[in-house]
Image (cartoon, rainbow, N blue to C red):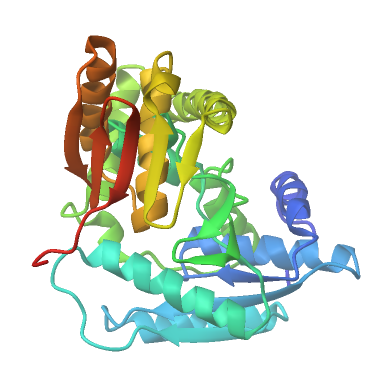
Amino acid sequence: MLDQRADPPLAAATARLLEKLATARGLLLAVSGGPDSMALMHLAARWRPHGADRPRIEVATVDHGLRAQAGAEAAAVAQAAQTLGLPHAILVWEGEKPSSRVQERARAARYGLLARHARARGLDTLVTAHHADDQAETILMRLQRGSGPAGLAGMRAHGRVPGAPDIALARPLLGVGKDELVALCGAVGQDFVEDPSNAHPAFQRVRARRLLPLLAREGLGAAGLLRLGERAARAEAALAALTAERLARLPADSALTRFGVARGALADLPEEVLLRLLAGQIARLTGAAPRLERLERAAAAIAAALVNGANWAGTLGGTTIRLGRSQLSVALAPARGR
């Protein structure tokens, strides 16, 4: 069992973060066997006994079948979970494995397996061990891609599992450094593994991780990136609120396959709000938003047409967009071949 004397400051701080999950029906911890997720499992086990009304906690490990050692590593997690009194399941990614975009597809498969298991077990919240170092790397990668405020805000502490909106996603360790989690594992005598893919330069995250010490010498280390993320999150929240307020007042007509709004109502709309209007309607109609660069080009063209009294038409993300004399419309594009 967890040594109650081990690293009390981190345990106490994490307990406050986990307390936000106390009203969940049940928590599924995603534990791979690495130091961050093994520390999460110990912290959750320490937090659980402090109140009889705490949610049920279970653990799951995904065996992607990509490395020969994965099965043994999952079994080691199962043994550690049993020692802590936590039910554990090994979820296997069956079928043929991809030869390209491996990490991206493995991530999607992992979330799918974990969401299905959580649903089957009556657990409504998936908890992952993403930490401050992960957050800094994520912000750097998005900065490299030219993301807007939403992307530069990094990962959210609370959200929904991708592809499974009925399952909440919690990341309580985003403010905790990996070195603290490694230290916790050492303090409680918990072994862990390091996935060799975490050091392979073929992956963008690994390259970003290697860049951080170089950037730190120029004043843009992990701490600076995390500050950037916090400021971008504030800006994103303000923009989202402004957008919601402005769009709620628009004389718009929203249908299953089409959206329309009076042209005159767009005259003083900030371009960023116009961009978000387009993104929201395209996502509503098609289930996915197009790339930011394409949205920006379309929004800029429409904004210029509004100023110049011109019409505009184009296609974007599976929709047809038209700015006519009286209305801006967004509609599902006709299926090809028809």
